[in-house]
Structures are given as C-alpha cells and as structure tokens.
Image (tube, rainbow, N blue to C red; front, side):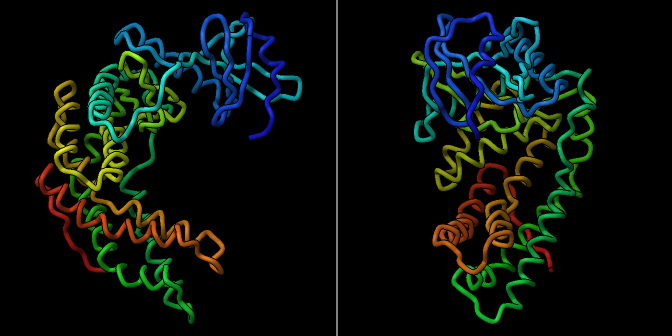
Length: 334
C-alpha cells in the first residue's frame, strides 16, 4: 500500500496527536482514543450498510465495534485532491484473539452467535449476495483436474509435482464427494432463506479480526467483506482456521460448537452444510491453485510443506467430522 495523504485528516472534527503505520492502515492517536484511517475501496452502498451493521450492533447487542466516523461534511468517505478516497473508524487498544487460548476462542464463538442474531436486514438482502458454493466447488474441482493434467505432461517432476500426483485421487474423491453432497443437501433451501431474511455474515471472522480488551471483552472489527449468505459460513471459516492450528482437535471443536449453539442453535440443514464445507479439501485446492499460477521453474519448500500438511490433516479432519457431526467422508469416481 502506498503512502497516505494525511491532509485528509483535516476533513474531520478531531485533533490528531500522533500517526503511525500499522497493517494496511494508519493508526491515529486522538483525545477521543485511537482511530484507524483506511484507504476506501468500498462503494457508497457498502459504506451505508456498514454503518447500519455498526448501529445495530451498538443498539441491539450492546456490542462495540469499529464504527465509522463522519467527516465535517457529514459523509463517511473523504476524498483528497488527487481523488483518493479514505474512511476513518473507531479503533481499540487491545490484542488479537490468541488462537492458543481456549477461553478466548470460546468467547469468540459466543460472540459470533450473538452477532448472527443481530445481522438480519431484509431490506439489504438482494444487494450483496455471496457466491454460490455449489458452483464454487465445481469450479475448484475442474481446476484440480486441470492441474493434474498439466503435471502429468511434465517430463521432469519435482517434489511438489510427485507428491501432488501421489495423493490426487484421494483428495479429488473427497472434493467431488463434498460437491455432490452439497447438491443433494438442503443447501439451496437455506441459501434462499438466508437471502429472504437478509442474513449478513462478517466474511472474515477469524482471530485477526477479533480484538481482546484488557477485561477480556471481544471487539469484532473489519466488516468490509460482509455479504448476504448462510450465517454458518462464518462459523465454518472460524472453525476451520482454528482447527488447522489445533490439528483438528475434536474436544476443542466440540466446545466451540457448544459455545455457539448455546446462543444461536443450528438447524439440521445448517449442520450438514457446515460438515460439507469443512469436508472440502480447501488447503489442497489452494496449494494446487497457487502452484498453477506461479513460476513453476522454482517451487519453494514452503509450498511443498503446505501441500504435505494439507494431505496429512485430511485423516485428522475425517475423525473430527465423524466425532462432531457423525459425518463420513465419501468417495466418488473421477
């Protein structure tokens, strides 16, 4: 990200004492507390919904978040002389949720459930749809076959290519099973219901976007990737990211599920959706996709390691799905 034009701060009714660069933004210290200045890649329509999300969290759930700050002209978007757009938002002094601390993870799961009970806006249901997961799985599976065909034709194969071909059939069977299972499930029904009810998701609910305050309270930030979708999509993403760090620990997974469902129960269709999403070999596909779109003359040891881990964790994930969801990874022919 390039240098920020800090003259944009003159457009706000605040006195900035200090500014320093942080990940993807500028942190501004003010009398009112820390604020974050971000370059705006959001449409005005998305900004207005963001404001609606923040207001609902504050009013309905008494949940503090990184609410947007209006400039002197009453707008949430400020523009510099060269046309660059920015927005300013409230920020917090705290630390990222620690993926190693069970207590913080369970609090994050409860927080997500509470959030999902608030994020329902029928009036914005048609404007920000998520992609069709069934189509996405189908596209990924076609890409996996394309990568296999490409590697097969290579006369000289390195460690990555050799390992990929060795495990391809097993991983592809799992991927196709997830796609077919989704098509045969109640996915379309709960997706349609989510749209009708205006169910929004955070879009990137992970420990990087959860700030733990000194008293242990959690602040959810960075809603910029919100969209209309089945809300269990957020739970899937959070659970997958945590489980990958914890070697698909079934005990921890069960605790996270209990923490969430105690506040926001899941229907049987939602549980099936969650199991199917978790069953898909996302990491394996990402490794293949990164490989195919990179300079194949040199494959880093990190890429080989990621591929190895994605394969090794498949068996751990299989046990996890059986124990948590009574879900069994199936097989399908190529």
